[in-house]
Length: 310
Image 1 (cartoon, one colour):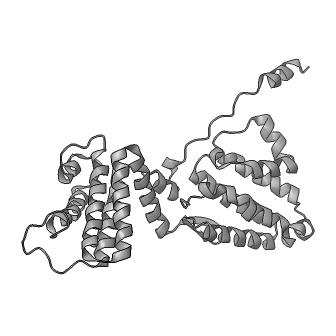
Image 2: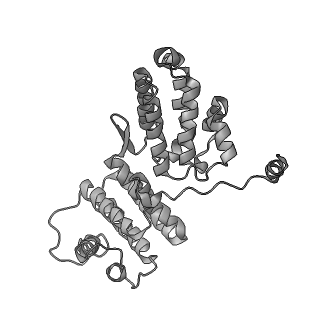
Image 3: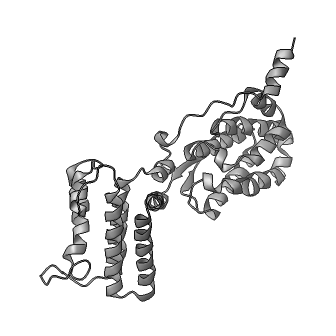
Protein backbone atom coordinates (compact mmCIF):
# COMPACT_ATOMS: atom_id res chain seq x y z
CA UNK A 1 0.00 0.00 0.00
CA UNK A 2 1.41 3.34 -1.01
CA UNK A 3 -0.36 5.36 1.68
CA UNK A 4 -2.42 7.49 -0.73
CA UNK A 5 -6.18 7.84 -0.49
CA UNK A 6 -6.50 7.18 -4.20
CA UNK A 7 -4.77 3.82 -3.89
CA UNK A 8 -7.09 2.81 -1.06
CA UNK A 9 -10.22 4.10 -2.82
CA UNK A 10 -11.49 0.61 -3.72
CA UNK A 11 -11.83 -0.15 0.00
CA UNK A 12 -13.81 3.00 0.79
CA UNK A 13 -17.16 1.53 -0.28
CA UNK A 14 -17.00 -1.71 1.78
CA UNK A 15 -15.23 -0.12 4.76
CA UNK A 16 -16.89 3.32 5.01
CA UNK A 17 -20.04 3.80 2.98
CA UNK A 18 -21.60 0.36 3.30
CA UNK A 19 -21.12 0.13 7.10
CA UNK A 20 -22.46 3.68 7.40
CA UNK A 21 -25.51 2.73 5.36
CA UNK A 22 -26.12 -0.33 7.53
CA UNK A 23 -25.73 1.51 10.82
CA UNK A 24 -28.64 2.20 13.13
CA UNK A 25 -27.88 5.91 12.87
CA UNK A 26 -28.42 5.83 9.10
CA UNK A 27 -31.74 4.05 9.36
CA UNK A 28 -33.01 6.63 11.84
CA UNK A 29 -31.69 9.66 9.96
CA UNK A 30 -34.98 10.97 8.62
CA UNK A 31 -36.67 10.56 11.99
CA UNK A 32 -33.86 12.39 13.79
CA UNK A 33 -33.36 15.37 11.48
CA UNK A 34 -35.90 15.19 8.67
CA UNK A 35 -33.01 14.77 6.24
CA UNK A 36 -33.42 11.65 4.12
CA UNK A 37 -30.82 9.06 3.16
CA UNK A 38 -31.82 9.64 -0.46
CA UNK A 39 -30.87 13.31 -0.19
CA UNK A 40 -27.53 12.42 1.37
CA UNK A 41 -26.54 10.14 -1.51
CA UNK A 42 -27.43 12.83 -4.02
CA UNK A 43 -25.35 15.37 -2.09
CA UNK A 44 -22.43 12.94 -1.99
CA UNK A 45 -22.62 12.49 -5.75
CA UNK A 46 -22.44 16.25 -6.27
CA UNK A 47 -19.13 16.26 -4.33
CA UNK A 48 -17.86 13.15 -6.10
CA UNK A 49 -18.46 14.74 -9.51
CA UNK A 50 -16.10 17.58 -8.52
CA UNK A 51 -13.32 15.06 -7.79
CA UNK A 52 -13.52 13.22 -11.10
CA UNK A 53 -10.80 13.50 -13.71
CA UNK A 54 -13.40 14.11 -16.41
CA UNK A 55 -16.59 16.03 -15.74
CA UNK A 56 -19.75 14.00 -16.35
CA UNK A 57 -22.00 14.99 -19.23
CA UNK A 58 -24.57 17.55 -18.10
CA UNK A 59 -27.49 15.22 -18.77
CA UNK A 60 -25.84 12.41 -16.83
CA UNK A 61 -24.95 14.77 -13.98
CA UNK A 62 -28.48 16.18 -13.73
CA UNK A 63 -30.06 12.75 -13.79
CA UNK A 64 -27.69 11.25 -11.21
CA UNK A 65 -27.68 14.24 -8.86
CA UNK A 66 -31.48 14.01 -8.64
CA UNK A 67 -31.85 10.25 -8.28
CA UNK A 68 -30.72 8.56 -5.06
CA UNK A 69 -30.41 5.12 -6.66
CA UNK A 70 -28.23 6.44 -9.50
CA UNK A 71 -26.19 8.52 -7.05
CA UNK A 72 -25.54 5.52 -4.81
CA UNK A 73 -24.54 3.39 -7.80
CA UNK A 74 -22.17 6.10 -9.04
CA UNK A 75 -20.43 6.28 -5.66
CA UNK A 76 -20.12 2.50 -5.49
CA UNK A 77 -18.85 2.14 -9.07
CA UNK A 78 -16.38 5.05 -9.14
CA UNK A 79 -12.83 3.81 -9.67
CA UNK A 80 -9.56 5.27 -8.43
CA UNK A 81 -8.50 5.86 -12.04
CA UNK A 82 -11.52 8.09 -12.55
CA UNK A 83 -10.42 10.43 -9.75
CA UNK A 84 -8.53 13.55 -10.75
CA UNK A 85 -5.82 13.61 -8.09
CA UNK A 86 -4.95 12.81 -4.50
CA UNK A 87 -5.80 16.40 -3.55
CA UNK A 88 -9.24 16.12 -5.16
CA UNK A 89 -9.82 12.77 -3.43
CA UNK A 90 -8.97 14.19 0.00
CA UNK A 91 -11.20 17.18 -0.66
CA UNK A 92 -14.06 14.85 -1.61
CA UNK A 93 -13.96 13.14 1.80
CA UNK A 94 -13.85 16.51 3.57
CA UNK A 95 -16.80 17.74 1.49
CA UNK A 96 -18.64 14.49 2.18
CA UNK A 97 -18.17 15.11 5.91
CA UNK A 98 -19.56 18.60 5.44
CA UNK A 99 -22.61 17.21 3.63
CA UNK A 100 -23.14 14.74 6.47
CA UNK A 101 -22.80 17.57 9.01
CA UNK A 102 -25.48 19.53 7.16
CA UNK A 103 -27.87 16.61 7.61
CA UNK A 104 -28.31 17.83 11.15
CA UNK A 105 -27.49 14.46 12.70
CA UNK A 106 -24.60 14.67 15.12
CA UNK A 107 -24.73 10.90 15.58
CA UNK A 108 -24.22 10.38 11.84
CA UNK A 109 -21.22 12.73 11.92
CA UNK A 110 -19.69 10.71 14.76
CA UNK A 111 -20.38 7.41 12.99
CA UNK A 112 -18.78 8.62 9.76
CA UNK A 113 -15.78 10.09 11.58
CA UNK A 114 -15.20 6.81 13.41
CA UNK A 115 -15.40 4.73 10.24
CA UNK A 116 -13.08 7.07 8.37
CA UNK A 117 -10.53 7.16 11.21
CA UNK A 118 -10.46 3.36 11.24
CA UNK A 119 -10.04 3.41 7.46
CA UNK A 120 -6.97 5.67 7.76
CA UNK A 121 -5.38 3.42 10.37
CA UNK A 122 -6.22 0.04 8.86
CA UNK A 123 -5.02 1.08 5.40
CA UNK A 124 -1.90 2.77 6.82
CA UNK A 125 -2.60 6.01 4.98
CA UNK A 126 -0.44 9.14 5.20
CA UNK A 127 -3.01 11.30 6.95
CA UNK A 128 -4.36 12.14 10.35
CA UNK A 129 -7.86 13.41 10.95
CA UNK A 130 -8.17 16.79 12.66
CA UNK A 131 -11.50 17.79 14.18
CA UNK A 132 -14.06 18.68 13.03
CA UNK A 133 -13.00 16.90 9.81
CA UNK A 134 -9.77 17.98 8.15
CA UNK A 135 -7.20 15.70 6.56
CA UNK A 136 -3.56 16.58 7.18
CA UNK A 137 -0.43 14.69 6.20
CA UNK A 138 1.50 13.30 9.15
CA UNK A 139 5.30 13.36 9.30
CA UNK A 140 5.85 9.61 8.73
CA UNK A 141 3.62 9.92 5.66
CA UNK A 142 5.82 12.72 4.29
CA UNK A 143 8.93 10.55 4.61
CA UNK A 144 7.10 7.64 3.03
CA UNK A 145 6.11 9.86 0.10
CA UNK A 146 9.72 10.96 -0.38
CA UNK A 147 10.89 7.35 -0.48
CA UNK A 148 8.06 6.44 -2.86
CA UNK A 149 9.17 9.23 -5.21
CA UNK A 150 12.72 7.88 -5.21
CA UNK A 151 11.41 4.38 -5.91
CA UNK A 152 9.34 5.67 -8.83
CA UNK A 153 12.39 7.42 -10.28
CA UNK A 154 14.29 4.11 -10.35
CA UNK A 155 11.76 2.76 -12.86
CA UNK A 156 13.15 5.14 -15.49
CA UNK A 157 16.27 3.09 -16.22
CA UNK A 158 17.47 -0.49 -15.55
CA UNK A 159 20.66 0.79 -13.93
CA UNK A 160 18.65 2.85 -11.45
CA UNK A 161 16.47 -0.12 -10.66
CA UNK A 162 19.52 -2.28 -10.07
CA UNK A 163 20.98 0.35 -7.74
CA UNK A 164 17.76 0.27 -5.70
CA UNK A 165 17.80 -3.53 -5.59
CA UNK A 166 21.44 -3.48 -4.42
CA UNK A 167 20.63 -1.01 -1.64
CA UNK A 168 17.54 -2.99 -0.60
CA UNK A 169 19.57 -6.21 -0.51
CA UNK A 170 22.26 -4.55 1.63
CA UNK A 171 19.61 -3.14 3.97
CA UNK A 172 17.95 -6.53 4.44
CA UNK A 173 21.30 -8.20 5.02
CA UNK A 174 22.21 -5.66 7.69
CA UNK A 175 18.97 -6.33 9.56
CA UNK A 176 20.00 -9.98 9.87
CA UNK A 177 23.61 -9.49 10.94
CA UNK A 178 24.03 -6.07 12.62
CA UNK A 179 27.78 -6.28 11.91
CA UNK A 180 29.97 -3.33 10.94
CA UNK A 181 30.98 -4.65 7.53
CA UNK A 182 27.32 -4.78 6.52
CA UNK A 183 26.77 -1.30 7.97
CA UNK A 184 29.46 -0.02 5.62
CA UNK A 185 27.94 -1.87 2.67
CA UNK A 186 24.52 -0.39 3.39
CA UNK A 187 25.90 3.18 3.45
CA UNK A 188 27.97 2.51 0.32
CA UNK A 189 24.98 1.18 -1.64
CA UNK A 190 22.83 4.11 -0.55
CA UNK A 191 25.48 6.47 -1.90
CA UNK A 192 25.61 4.62 -5.20
CA UNK A 193 21.82 4.80 -5.51
CA UNK A 194 21.80 8.55 -4.92
CA UNK A 195 24.69 9.05 -7.35
CA UNK A 196 22.77 7.13 -10.03
CA UNK A 197 19.65 9.21 -9.42
CA UNK A 198 21.62 12.44 -9.71
CA UNK A 199 23.19 11.33 -12.99
CA UNK A 200 19.84 11.13 -14.83
CA UNK A 201 18.88 14.74 -14.16
CA UNK A 202 18.62 16.38 -17.61
CA UNK A 203 21.13 19.11 -16.76
CA UNK A 204 23.52 16.87 -14.79
CA UNK A 205 27.13 16.86 -16.00
CA UNK A 206 30.24 15.20 -14.59
CA UNK A 207 31.76 11.86 -13.65
CA UNK A 208 31.40 12.04 -9.87
CA UNK A 209 28.74 13.03 -7.38
CA UNK A 210 30.29 16.38 -6.52
CA UNK A 211 30.44 17.45 -10.16
CA UNK A 212 26.89 16.25 -10.74
CA UNK A 213 25.65 18.32 -7.80
CA UNK A 214 27.54 21.41 -9.00
CA UNK A 215 25.92 21.18 -12.43
CA UNK A 216 22.32 20.78 -11.22
CA UNK A 217 19.89 23.67 -10.73
CA UNK A 218 17.60 21.99 -8.21
CA UNK A 219 19.12 23.54 -5.07
CA UNK A 220 17.51 26.45 -3.15
CA UNK A 221 21.00 27.74 -2.34
CA UNK A 222 24.62 26.62 -2.27
CA UNK A 223 24.56 25.62 1.42
CA UNK A 224 22.09 22.80 0.77
CA UNK A 225 24.13 21.64 -2.22
CA UNK A 226 27.35 21.60 -0.22
CA UNK A 227 25.68 19.84 2.72
CA UNK A 228 24.49 17.01 0.46
CA UNK A 229 27.95 16.74 -1.10
CA UNK A 230 29.58 16.58 2.35
CA UNK A 231 27.16 13.89 3.44
CA UNK A 232 28.08 11.82 0.39
CA UNK A 233 31.78 12.43 1.03
CA UNK A 234 31.41 10.62 4.36
CA UNK A 235 31.40 7.32 2.45
CA UNK A 236 34.73 8.21 0.85
CA UNK A 237 36.29 9.59 4.02
CA UNK A 238 35.27 6.93 6.55
CA UNK A 239 37.61 3.91 6.30
CA UNK A 240 36.14 0.86 4.64
CA UNK A 241 32.93 2.33 3.23
CA UNK A 242 34.00 3.39 -0.27
CA UNK A 243 37.79 3.77 0.14
CA UNK A 244 40.20 2.53 2.77
CA UNK A 245 43.03 5.01 3.02
CA UNK A 246 44.69 4.93 6.45
CA UNK A 247 44.23 8.29 8.14
CA UNK A 248 42.81 9.80 11.33
CA UNK A 249 39.27 10.38 10.05
CA UNK A 250 37.45 7.94 12.31
CA UNK A 251 36.15 9.13 15.70
CA UNK A 252 34.54 5.78 16.59
CA UNK A 253 33.34 2.56 15.04
CA UNK A 254 30.10 2.57 13.09
CA UNK A 255 26.93 1.45 14.84
CA UNK A 256 23.39 0.72 13.69
CA UNK A 257 22.36 4.36 14.02
CA UNK A 258 24.88 5.37 11.38
CA UNK A 259 23.78 2.67 8.99
CA UNK A 260 20.17 3.90 9.23
CA UNK A 261 20.53 7.68 9.53
CA UNK A 262 23.17 8.23 6.84
CA UNK A 263 21.32 6.26 4.11
CA UNK A 264 18.04 7.91 5.16
CA UNK A 265 19.59 11.36 4.82
CA UNK A 266 21.13 10.49 1.47
CA UNK A 267 17.95 9.00 -0.01
CA UNK A 268 15.85 11.86 1.35
CA UNK A 269 18.23 14.36 -0.24
CA UNK A 270 17.68 12.56 -3.55
CA UNK A 271 14.19 14.04 -3.43
CA UNK A 272 15.78 17.11 -5.02
CA UNK A 273 16.53 15.10 -8.16
CA UNK A 274 12.98 14.04 -9.11
CA UNK A 275 9.51 15.39 -9.82
CA UNK A 276 8.23 14.68 -6.26
CA UNK A 277 4.78 13.69 -7.45
CA UNK A 278 4.02 11.58 -4.37
CA UNK A 279 5.29 14.27 -2.01
CA UNK A 280 3.22 16.98 -3.71
CA UNK A 281 0.20 14.67 -3.64
CA UNK A 282 0.62 14.01 0.07
CA UNK A 283 1.03 17.71 0.82
CA UNK A 284 -2.10 18.36 -1.28
CA UNK A 285 -0.26 20.88 -3.40
CA UNK A 286 -2.32 22.73 -6.00
CA UNK A 287 0.51 21.97 -8.44
CA UNK A 288 -0.43 18.29 -8.19
CA UNK A 289 -4.14 18.96 -8.76
CA UNK A 290 -4.81 19.42 -12.50
CA UNK A 291 -8.01 21.10 -13.68
CA UNK A 292 -10.97 18.88 -14.41
CA UNK A 293 -11.27 17.79 -18.01
CA UNK A 294 -14.43 18.78 -19.89
CA UNK A 295 -17.09 16.10 -20.40
CA UNK A 296 -17.09 13.86 -23.44
CA UNK A 297 -19.37 15.06 -26.23
CA UNK A 298 -22.79 13.39 -26.21
CA UNK A 299 -23.17 10.20 -28.20
CA UNK A 300 -24.60 10.38 -31.73
CA UNK A 301 -27.89 8.87 -30.56
CA UNK A 302 -28.24 11.58 -27.97
CA UNK A 303 -27.57 14.28 -30.55
CA UNK A 304 -30.16 12.75 -32.87
CA UNK A 305 -32.70 12.74 -30.07
CA UNK A 306 -31.97 16.38 -29.30
CA UNK A 307 -32.37 17.36 -32.97
CA UNK A 308 -35.64 15.43 -33.22
CA UNK A 309 -37.11 17.22 -30.19
CA UNK A 310 -39.72 19.89 -31.12
